[in-house]
Length: 393
Ligand code: NZQ
Ligand code: ZN
Image (cartoon, rainbow, N blue to C red; front, top):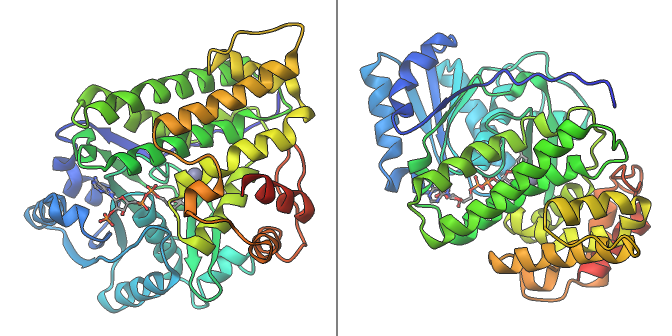
């Protein structure tokens, strides 16, 4: 078992009345002037944005608003947010939305106190000394950003999508009302659950296979998310299933399912280039890549794939043929993706075949110009990554 530090300081306020506490929570965490940051239209259309603004006003908390965050959030809006916060003397960022809004909020929060270019944090050229406090009212249980230390931003200049992790960025509080997720379209619901299962899988596919408690928690979480996604696809207003998905998604990315394990994250890194180049939904991009990644790497630790197949997907274990059981697990995962409307290759994802030039370009970006490798279950260089894109095309 690996040594580990588990630090999940976000205060989770969960349930149907959770939004009512927003003003007192902002004050509790030191906010005087808030930037309310939101996306395109869903938070406006549902009335949530007006409700949050009304609650802040009634609670005596001053605020300004900035909307317009798009999926795969853009650096240009982060710059706009930083300028606005400086002009208005903002000292607290409240994201009202999904992962993209929260990630954009985190980038603004580290950019405001920094004199240089915020993108430097994402490229590794600099690291922030401090952040403005960030919190969120979550509307989509998908990215897991509500409790995570990461944010992922797309720089339109070159279509480069990069993640940055820093403990200081963990939200101070996360308000989670499952009712707010009733309006999520089926594709977004399925993509979100796919992403969350993948957050668990990226930690689960590890060579550190002596952490039974973590593995068992991860397996239960994955099975539970798989069961409940079918329930909400059949009935979008199934509160019980929406609630379990919402909480499960947060646990999937607050590091609980990584305690004692190394983790891999290659599928995420390979997918980020797809999102950067084709602006696809992150979770769907993961489903398009994972089966090819799995077939490329499974021989590194067949027994891990067997355990996944048997304990998560219910594949009968054939003790005479571990490889066969492992491959049946990958096939069962593909059937699950199809059953919830997710793609299992890039053609299904973007509706056309990706070209050789695009493959080479994505692999180049993924290895920061052939300078770094990705993954740990099998360490992948640019040629491996190109091979995975080709298998997935
Ligand atoms: O813009 P609006 O109109 O609000 O629409 C959004 C958006 O189009 C819509 N939506 C959100 N809540 C809704 C709703 N529609 C109806 N009803 C609601 N209640 O959903 C669409 C997608 O929203 P987005 O925030 O982009 O989704 P998600 O939460 O999946 O976030 C994806 C982003 O998170 C990054 C991804 O790379 C991607 O950029 N990730 C961030 C991570 C982190 N910070 O820890 C980890 C993840 O692995 C991931 O990489
Ligand atoms: Zn993800």
